[in-house]
Image 1 (tube, rainbow, N blue to C red):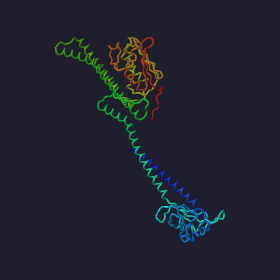
Image 2: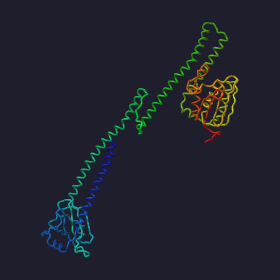
Image 3: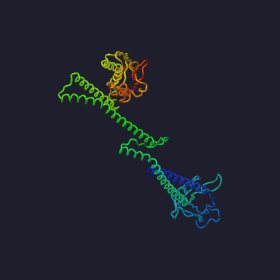
Length: 464
Protein backbone atom coordinates (compact mmCIF):
# COMPACT_ATOMS: atom_id res chain seq x y z
CA UNK A 1 0.00 0.00 0.00
CA UNK A 2 2.84 2.40 0.77
CA UNK A 3 4.52 1.64 -2.56
CA UNK A 4 1.25 2.06 -4.44
CA UNK A 5 0.52 5.33 -2.64
CA UNK A 6 4.00 6.67 -3.37
CA UNK A 7 3.75 5.69 -7.04
CA UNK A 8 0.23 7.17 -7.26
CA UNK A 9 1.46 10.47 -5.86
CA UNK A 10 4.46 10.54 -8.22
CA UNK A 11 2.38 9.57 -11.29
CA UNK A 12 -0.30 12.11 -10.42
CA UNK A 13 2.29 14.86 -10.07
CA UNK A 14 3.95 13.94 -13.38
CA UNK A 15 0.59 13.59 -15.20
CA UNK A 16 -0.73 16.94 -14.01
CA UNK A 17 2.56 18.62 -14.88
CA UNK A 18 2.52 17.00 -18.32
CA UNK A 19 -1.08 18.11 -18.94
CA UNK A 20 -0.34 21.73 -18.07
CA UNK A 21 2.82 21.73 -20.19
CA UNK A 22 0.89 20.44 -23.22
CA UNK A 23 -1.87 22.97 -22.57
CA UNK A 24 0.69 25.76 -22.49
CA UNK A 25 2.31 24.54 -25.70
CA UNK A 26 -1.02 24.37 -27.53
CA UNK A 27 -1.92 27.83 -26.27
CA UNK A 28 1.39 29.24 -27.50
CA UNK A 29 0.83 27.61 -30.87
CA UNK A 30 -2.63 29.17 -31.16
CA UNK A 31 -1.24 32.56 -30.23
CA UNK A 32 1.44 32.24 -32.89
CA UNK A 33 -1.12 31.28 -35.53
CA UNK A 34 -3.38 34.17 -34.57
CA UNK A 35 -0.50 36.63 -34.75
CA UNK A 36 0.58 35.37 -38.16
CA UNK A 37 -3.00 35.61 -39.53
CA UNK A 38 -3.43 39.26 -38.50
CA UNK A 39 -1.96 40.66 -41.78
CA UNK A 40 -2.43 44.33 -42.77
CA UNK A 41 -5.47 45.29 -44.91
CA UNK A 42 -5.52 48.01 -47.58
CA UNK A 43 -7.63 51.12 -47.08
CA UNK A 44 -9.91 50.08 -49.94
CA UNK A 45 -10.52 46.67 -48.36
CA UNK A 46 -11.41 48.24 -45.02
CA UNK A 47 -13.73 50.76 -46.70
CA UNK A 48 -15.45 48.05 -48.73
CA UNK A 49 -15.97 45.87 -45.64
CA UNK A 50 -17.44 48.72 -43.68
CA UNK A 51 -19.77 49.89 -46.52
CA UNK A 52 -21.04 46.51 -47.67
CA UNK A 53 -20.93 44.61 -44.37
CA UNK A 54 -22.50 42.15 -44.02
CA UNK A 55 -24.11 41.81 -47.48
CA UNK A 56 -21.06 41.48 -49.79
CA UNK A 57 -18.98 38.35 -49.55
CA UNK A 58 -15.32 38.22 -50.48
CA UNK A 59 -15.19 36.01 -53.57
CA UNK A 60 -11.58 36.49 -54.60
CA UNK A 61 -10.55 33.21 -52.93
CA UNK A 62 -7.92 34.91 -50.80
CA UNK A 63 -9.96 35.06 -47.59
CA UNK A 64 -9.03 33.25 -44.38
CA UNK A 65 -9.77 29.50 -43.94
CA UNK A 66 -13.28 28.50 -42.97
CA UNK A 67 -12.37 27.52 -39.37
CA UNK A 68 -11.28 31.11 -38.67
CA UNK A 69 -13.40 33.72 -36.96
CA UNK A 70 -12.97 37.24 -38.39
CA UNK A 71 -14.79 40.45 -37.65
CA UNK A 72 -14.23 44.20 -37.80
CA UNK A 73 -15.01 46.36 -34.74
CA UNK A 74 -15.59 50.10 -34.92
CA UNK A 75 -15.06 52.59 -32.16
CA UNK A 76 -18.80 52.91 -31.61
CA UNK A 77 -19.17 49.15 -31.01
CA UNK A 78 -20.37 48.18 -34.49
CA UNK A 79 -19.34 44.67 -35.61
CA UNK A 80 -18.83 43.68 -39.25
CA UNK A 81 -18.59 39.94 -39.94
CA UNK A 82 -17.50 38.73 -43.41
CA UNK A 83 -19.47 35.80 -44.89
CA UNK A 84 -16.47 33.50 -44.78
CA UNK A 85 -16.07 33.88 -41.00
CA UNK A 86 -16.84 30.79 -38.90
CA UNK A 87 -19.20 32.86 -36.79
CA UNK A 88 -19.61 35.93 -34.66
CA UNK A 89 -17.43 36.45 -31.55
CA UNK A 90 -18.76 38.19 -28.47
CA UNK A 91 -17.48 41.72 -28.06
CA UNK A 92 -15.82 43.09 -24.90
CA UNK A 93 -14.97 46.56 -23.71
CA UNK A 94 -11.28 45.84 -24.33
CA UNK A 95 -11.94 45.17 -28.01
CA UNK A 96 -13.78 48.52 -28.38
CA UNK A 97 -10.92 50.27 -26.56
CA UNK A 98 -8.46 48.92 -29.18
CA UNK A 99 -10.70 50.31 -31.98
CA UNK A 100 -10.88 53.71 -30.32
CA UNK A 101 -7.13 54.05 -29.81
CA UNK A 102 -5.30 51.79 -32.28
CA UNK A 103 -1.51 51.74 -32.52
CA UNK A 104 0.93 49.91 -34.79
CA UNK A 105 1.81 47.42 -32.04
CA UNK A 106 -1.59 46.81 -30.49
CA UNK A 107 -2.14 43.05 -29.89
CA UNK A 108 -4.74 41.80 -27.40
CA UNK A 109 -5.04 38.01 -26.98
CA UNK A 110 -7.67 36.41 -24.76
CA UNK A 111 -10.06 33.50 -24.38
CA UNK A 112 -13.55 34.31 -25.58
CA UNK A 113 -16.68 32.71 -26.98
CA UNK A 114 -18.79 32.88 -30.09
CA UNK A 115 -22.50 33.60 -30.41
CA UNK A 116 -23.28 29.89 -29.87
CA UNK A 117 -21.25 29.66 -26.65
CA UNK A 118 -18.28 27.84 -28.18
CA UNK A 119 -14.80 28.57 -26.78
CA UNK A 120 -12.61 30.71 -29.03
CA UNK A 121 -9.08 32.03 -28.78
CA UNK A 122 -9.30 35.70 -29.81
CA UNK A 123 -6.70 38.25 -30.88
CA UNK A 124 -7.79 41.90 -31.21
CA UNK A 125 -5.44 44.30 -33.02
CA UNK A 126 -5.32 47.47 -35.05
CA UNK A 127 -6.09 47.43 -38.80
CA UNK A 128 -2.86 48.46 -40.48
CA UNK A 129 -3.02 50.14 -43.92
CA UNK A 130 -0.27 51.13 -46.27
CA UNK A 131 3.02 49.42 -46.82
CA UNK A 132 6.65 49.53 -45.76
CA UNK A 133 7.61 52.25 -43.33
CA UNK A 134 4.36 54.12 -44.06
CA UNK A 135 2.12 51.53 -42.39
CA UNK A 136 -0.39 53.27 -40.16
CA UNK A 137 -3.33 52.06 -38.03
CA UNK A 138 -6.73 52.69 -39.58
CA UNK A 139 -8.50 55.13 -37.24
CA UNK A 140 -11.57 54.01 -35.35
CA UNK A 141 -11.34 50.38 -36.44
CA UNK A 142 -9.93 47.11 -34.94
CA UNK A 143 -9.84 43.60 -36.34
CA UNK A 144 -10.73 40.52 -34.27
CA UNK A 145 -9.30 37.16 -35.36
CA UNK A 146 -10.31 33.97 -33.57
CA UNK A 147 -9.71 30.21 -33.74
CA UNK A 148 -12.08 27.64 -32.28
CA UNK A 149 -10.75 25.76 -29.24
CA UNK A 150 -12.71 22.59 -30.01
CA UNK A 151 -9.69 20.72 -31.39
CA UNK A 152 -7.48 21.94 -28.57
CA UNK A 153 -9.99 20.95 -25.92
CA UNK A 154 -10.50 17.57 -27.58
CA UNK A 155 -6.74 17.00 -27.61
CA UNK A 156 -6.46 17.93 -23.94
CA UNK A 157 -9.40 15.70 -23.02
CA UNK A 158 -7.84 12.77 -24.89
CA UNK A 159 -4.51 13.43 -23.19
CA UNK A 160 -6.17 13.53 -19.75
CA UNK A 161 -7.90 10.21 -20.46
CA UNK A 162 -4.67 8.60 -21.63
CA UNK A 163 -2.77 9.90 -18.61
CA UNK A 164 -5.52 8.65 -16.31
CA UNK A 165 -5.46 5.17 -17.82
CA UNK A 166 -1.67 4.98 -17.83
CA UNK A 167 -1.53 6.25 -14.23
CA UNK A 168 -4.12 3.71 -13.10
CA UNK A 169 -2.25 0.85 -14.75
CA UNK A 170 1.01 2.12 -13.28
CA UNK A 171 -0.40 2.36 -9.76
CA UNK A 172 -1.99 -1.10 -9.92
CA UNK A 173 1.23 -2.55 -11.33
CA UNK A 174 3.31 -0.80 -8.68
CA UNK A 175 1.00 -2.09 -5.96
CA UNK A 176 1.28 -5.66 -7.26
CA UNK A 177 5.05 -5.36 -7.58
CA UNK A 178 5.29 -3.82 -4.10
CA UNK A 179 3.23 -6.66 -2.65
CA UNK A 180 5.44 -9.26 -4.32
CA UNK A 181 8.65 -7.52 -3.20
CA UNK A 182 7.32 -7.07 0.35
CA UNK A 183 6.38 -10.73 0.62
CA UNK A 184 9.75 -11.81 -0.73
CA UNK A 185 11.57 -9.40 1.57
CA UNK A 186 9.59 -10.39 4.66
CA UNK A 187 9.89 -14.13 4.08
CA UNK A 188 13.21 -14.26 6.06
CA UNK A 189 11.53 -12.24 8.81
CA UNK A 190 8.73 -14.81 8.92
CA UNK A 191 11.32 -17.57 9.25
CA UNK A 192 13.04 -15.61 12.01
CA UNK A 193 9.72 -15.15 13.80
CA UNK A 194 8.97 -18.86 13.55
CA UNK A 195 12.43 -19.68 14.90
CA UNK A 196 12.01 -17.30 17.86
CA UNK A 197 8.59 -18.74 18.65
CA UNK A 198 10.03 -22.27 18.41
CA UNK A 199 12.84 -21.40 20.84
CA UNK A 200 10.37 -19.75 23.25
CA UNK A 201 8.08 -22.78 23.08
CA UNK A 202 10.64 -25.63 23.19
CA UNK A 203 13.83 -23.96 24.55
CA UNK A 204 15.66 -25.64 21.68
CA UNK A 205 18.75 -23.46 21.18
CA UNK A 206 20.06 -25.58 18.31
CA UNK A 207 17.79 -23.75 15.85
CA UNK A 208 19.67 -21.91 13.10
CA UNK A 209 18.34 -19.64 10.38
CA UNK A 210 19.99 -20.21 6.99
CA UNK A 211 21.72 -17.05 5.72
CA UNK A 212 23.37 -16.47 2.36
CA UNK A 213 27.04 -15.77 3.00
CA UNK A 214 27.23 -12.95 0.44
CA UNK A 215 24.10 -11.20 1.73
CA UNK A 216 24.63 -8.13 3.90
CA UNK A 217 21.17 -6.57 4.15
CA UNK A 218 19.30 -5.82 7.37
CA UNK A 219 17.46 -9.15 7.47
CA UNK A 220 20.69 -11.10 6.91
CA UNK A 221 22.43 -9.21 9.72
CA UNK A 222 19.43 -9.80 11.98
CA UNK A 223 19.51 -13.52 11.16
CA UNK A 224 23.24 -13.72 11.88
CA UNK A 225 22.70 -11.89 15.17
CA UNK A 226 19.96 -14.34 16.12
CA UNK A 227 22.20 -17.30 15.27
CA UNK A 228 25.02 -15.78 17.32
CA UNK A 229 22.63 -15.18 20.22
CA UNK A 230 21.32 -18.75 20.24
CA UNK A 231 24.88 -20.07 19.97
CA UNK A 232 25.96 -17.94 22.94
CA UNK A 233 22.90 -19.00 24.95
CA UNK A 234 23.52 -22.66 24.14
CA UNK A 235 27.16 -22.31 25.16
CA UNK A 236 26.15 -20.53 28.38
CA UNK A 237 23.63 -23.24 29.20
CA UNK A 238 26.21 -25.96 28.51
CA UNK A 239 28.71 -24.18 30.77
CA UNK A 240 26.06 -23.82 33.45
CA UNK A 241 25.17 -27.51 33.28
CA UNK A 242 28.87 -28.40 33.30
CA UNK A 243 29.44 -26.16 36.30
CA UNK A 244 26.54 -27.78 38.17
CA UNK A 245 27.79 -31.26 37.33
CA UNK A 246 31.39 -30.44 38.31
CA UNK A 247 30.28 -28.67 41.48
CA UNK A 248 28.12 -31.64 42.42
CA UNK A 249 31.08 -33.98 41.89
CA UNK A 250 33.42 -31.81 43.93
CA UNK A 251 30.90 -31.37 46.72
CA UNK A 252 30.27 -35.10 46.94
CA UNK A 253 33.80 -35.85 48.20
CA UNK A 254 33.86 -33.61 51.31
CA UNK A 255 30.23 -34.38 52.07
CA UNK A 256 30.90 -38.13 51.90
CA UNK A 257 33.90 -37.76 54.17
CA UNK A 258 31.91 -35.62 56.60
CA UNK A 259 29.07 -38.14 56.65
CA UNK A 260 31.46 -41.03 57.29
CA UNK A 261 33.25 -39.29 60.16
CA UNK A 262 29.99 -38.09 61.76
CA UNK A 263 28.50 -41.60 61.50
CA UNK A 264 31.57 -43.03 63.29
CA UNK A 265 31.25 -40.48 66.07
CA UNK A 266 27.50 -41.04 66.34
CA UNK A 267 27.84 -44.83 66.42
CA UNK A 268 30.41 -44.67 69.19
CA UNK A 269 27.99 -42.59 71.25
CA UNK A 270 25.04 -44.87 70.50
CA UNK A 271 26.89 -48.09 71.33
CA UNK A 272 28.46 -46.70 74.49
CA UNK A 273 31.93 -47.60 73.27
CA UNK A 274 33.82 -44.31 73.10
CA UNK A 275 36.63 -43.98 70.59
CA UNK A 276 40.19 -43.67 71.78
CA UNK A 277 41.15 -40.10 72.44
CA UNK A 278 43.64 -40.00 69.56
CA UNK A 279 41.13 -41.44 67.07
CA UNK A 280 38.43 -39.06 68.24
CA UNK A 281 40.78 -36.12 67.92
CA UNK A 282 41.77 -37.21 64.41
CA UNK A 283 38.10 -37.58 63.37
CA UNK A 284 37.24 -34.12 64.67
CA UNK A 285 40.25 -32.63 62.88
CA UNK A 286 39.15 -34.36 59.68
CA UNK A 287 35.59 -33.00 60.08
CA UNK A 288 36.97 -29.52 60.63
CA UNK A 289 39.22 -29.79 57.56
CA UNK A 290 36.38 -31.07 55.41
CA UNK A 291 34.11 -28.22 56.55
CA UNK A 292 36.86 -25.73 55.77
CA UNK A 293 37.32 -27.26 52.34
CA UNK A 294 33.53 -27.24 51.79
CA UNK A 295 33.31 -23.57 52.78
CA UNK A 296 36.18 -22.66 50.44
CA UNK A 297 34.51 -24.53 47.59
CA UNK A 298 31.20 -22.75 48.18
CA UNK A 299 33.01 -19.42 48.26
CA UNK A 300 34.75 -20.21 44.98
CA UNK A 301 31.43 -21.14 43.38
CA UNK A 302 29.86 -17.89 44.57
CA UNK A 303 32.78 -15.95 43.11
CA UNK A 304 32.41 -17.68 39.75
CA UNK A 305 28.63 -17.12 39.72
CA UNK A 306 28.93 -13.35 39.98
CA UNK A 307 28.00 -11.47 36.80
CA UNK A 308 30.21 -9.03 34.93
CA UNK A 309 27.87 -6.18 35.90
CA UNK A 310 28.32 -6.87 39.61
CA UNK A 311 32.07 -6.77 39.11
CA UNK A 312 31.97 -3.41 37.33
CA UNK A 313 30.11 -1.70 40.19
CA UNK A 314 33.02 -2.21 42.64
CA UNK A 315 35.97 -1.30 40.42
CA UNK A 316 38.32 1.38 41.77
CA UNK A 317 41.95 2.44 41.63
CA UNK A 318 44.03 -0.11 43.56
CA UNK A 319 47.71 -0.20 44.50
CA UNK A 320 48.97 -3.50 43.09
CA UNK A 321 52.04 -3.22 45.33
CA UNK A 322 49.96 -2.99 48.52
CA UNK A 323 47.60 -5.76 47.37
CA UNK A 324 50.58 -8.03 46.66
CA UNK A 325 52.06 -7.27 50.09
CA UNK A 326 48.76 -8.22 51.77
CA UNK A 327 48.64 -11.47 49.81
CA UNK A 328 52.29 -12.18 50.74
CA UNK A 329 51.51 -11.85 54.45
CA UNK A 330 48.79 -14.49 54.16
CA UNK A 331 51.04 -16.75 52.07
CA UNK A 332 53.88 -16.57 54.62
CA UNK A 333 51.46 -17.71 57.34
CA UNK A 334 50.49 -20.72 55.24
CA UNK A 335 54.04 -21.64 54.37
CA UNK A 336 56.26 -20.77 57.33
CA UNK A 337 58.80 -23.36 56.26
CA UNK A 338 59.42 -21.54 52.94
CA UNK A 339 61.41 -18.45 52.09
CA UNK A 340 59.30 -15.96 50.14
CA UNK A 341 61.23 -13.05 48.66
CA UNK A 342 59.56 -9.96 47.20
CA UNK A 343 60.76 -7.09 45.02
CA UNK A 344 57.76 -4.84 44.46
CA UNK A 345 57.61 -1.50 42.66
CA UNK A 346 54.65 0.91 42.86
CA UNK A 347 51.90 0.26 40.30
CA UNK A 348 48.26 1.36 40.28
CA UNK A 349 45.48 -0.43 38.41
CA UNK A 350 41.68 -0.30 38.11
CA UNK A 351 40.19 -3.46 39.67
CA UNK A 352 38.02 -4.76 42.47
CA UNK A 353 40.28 -4.76 45.55
CA UNK A 354 39.00 -7.92 47.28
CA UNK A 355 38.85 -9.93 44.03
CA UNK A 356 42.36 -8.86 43.02
CA UNK A 357 43.78 -9.81 46.44
CA UNK A 358 42.03 -13.18 46.29
CA UNK A 359 43.50 -13.83 42.84
CA UNK A 360 47.03 -13.06 44.09
CA UNK A 361 46.47 -15.24 47.18
CA UNK A 362 45.40 -18.14 44.92
CA UNK A 363 48.58 -17.77 42.87
CA UNK A 364 50.78 -17.69 45.98
CA UNK A 365 48.86 -20.60 47.56
CA UNK A 366 49.70 -22.76 44.56
CA UNK A 367 53.35 -21.75 44.79
CA UNK A 368 53.41 -22.59 48.52
CA UNK A 369 51.52 -25.85 48.02
CA UNK A 370 53.90 -27.25 45.40
CA UNK A 371 57.21 -25.93 46.76
CA UNK A 372 59.46 -28.36 48.67
CA UNK A 373 60.06 -27.59 52.34
CA UNK A 374 62.84 -25.03 52.86
CA UNK A 375 62.70 -23.86 49.25
CA UNK A 376 62.24 -20.30 47.94
CA UNK A 377 59.34 -18.55 46.22
CA UNK A 378 60.32 -15.42 44.28
CA UNK A 379 57.82 -12.58 43.74
CA UNK A 380 58.64 -9.56 41.57
CA UNK A 381 56.58 -6.55 40.38
CA UNK A 382 58.07 -4.30 37.68
CA UNK A 383 56.25 -1.98 35.24
CA UNK A 384 52.89 -3.62 35.84
CA UNK A 385 54.19 -7.18 35.39
CA UNK A 386 53.93 -9.43 38.44
CA UNK A 387 55.83 -12.73 38.38
CA UNK A 388 55.65 -15.57 40.91
CA UNK A 389 58.25 -18.30 40.49
CA UNK A 390 58.51 -21.48 42.58
CA UNK A 391 61.00 -24.36 42.43
CA UNK A 392 58.52 -27.20 42.65
CA UNK A 393 57.94 -30.06 40.20
CA UNK A 394 56.40 -27.77 37.61
CA UNK A 395 53.49 -28.48 35.27
CA UNK A 396 53.84 -30.90 32.36
CA UNK A 397 53.66 -29.21 28.95
CA UNK A 398 50.56 -31.18 27.91
CA UNK A 399 48.67 -29.93 31.00
CA UNK A 400 49.43 -26.21 30.58
CA UNK A 401 46.45 -25.52 28.23
CA UNK A 402 44.03 -26.79 30.92
CA UNK A 403 45.29 -25.04 34.04
CA UNK A 404 42.65 -22.26 33.89
CA UNK A 405 39.70 -24.61 33.26
CA UNK A 406 37.10 -24.90 36.01
CA UNK A 407 37.53 -27.89 38.32
CA UNK A 408 40.55 -29.10 36.38
CA UNK A 409 43.28 -30.59 38.55
CA UNK A 410 46.53 -32.19 37.57
CA UNK A 411 46.56 -35.94 38.21
CA UNK A 412 49.60 -35.48 40.44
CA UNK A 413 47.75 -32.90 42.60
CA UNK A 414 44.42 -34.62 43.10
CA UNK A 415 45.46 -35.97 46.49
CA UNK A 416 46.16 -32.43 47.74
CA UNK A 417 43.48 -30.09 49.16
CA UNK A 418 41.72 -27.86 46.64
CA UNK A 419 38.74 -27.66 44.32
CA UNK A 420 40.34 -26.84 40.98
CA UNK A 421 38.68 -23.39 40.88
CA UNK A 422 41.54 -21.23 42.13
CA UNK A 423 43.28 -20.53 38.81
CA UNK A 424 39.92 -20.20 37.05
CA UNK A 425 39.08 -17.37 39.47
CA UNK A 426 42.52 -15.86 38.85
CA UNK A 427 42.00 -15.85 35.07
CA UNK A 428 38.56 -14.27 35.37
CA UNK A 429 39.68 -11.55 37.80
CA UNK A 430 42.74 -10.55 35.75
CA UNK A 431 40.68 -10.53 32.55
CA UNK A 432 38.06 -8.27 34.16
CA UNK A 433 40.82 -5.86 35.15
CA UNK A 434 41.95 -5.68 31.52
CA UNK A 435 45.09 -7.77 31.98
CA UNK A 436 46.32 -11.26 31.17
CA UNK A 437 47.83 -14.15 33.12
CA UNK A 438 50.00 -17.00 31.84
CA UNK A 439 51.64 -20.11 33.34
CA UNK A 440 54.81 -21.62 31.99
CA UNK A 441 57.64 -23.92 32.98
CA UNK A 442 60.42 -21.94 34.63
CA UNK A 443 64.05 -22.39 33.51
CA UNK A 444 65.72 -24.88 35.82
CA UNK A 445 62.39 -26.34 37.03
CA UNK A 446 59.35 -25.08 38.76
CA UNK A 447 56.46 -22.92 37.56
CA UNK A 448 56.46 -19.26 36.49
CA UNK A 449 53.20 -17.30 36.76
CA UNK A 450 53.13 -13.95 34.90
CA UNK A 451 50.38 -11.37 35.47
CA UNK A 452 50.25 -8.21 33.33
CA UNK A 453 47.87 -5.41 34.28
CA UNK A 454 47.45 -1.99 32.62
CA UNK A 455 48.04 0.94 34.90
CA UNK A 456 50.61 3.56 35.94
CA UNK A 457 53.35 3.92 38.58
CA UNK A 458 51.45 6.84 40.17
CA UNK A 459 47.73 7.04 41.03
CA UNK A 460 45.58 9.18 38.70
CA UNK A 461 44.36 12.53 40.05
CA UNK A 462 41.02 12.40 41.81
CA UNK A 463 38.03 13.70 39.87
CA UNK A 464 36.44 16.66 41.68
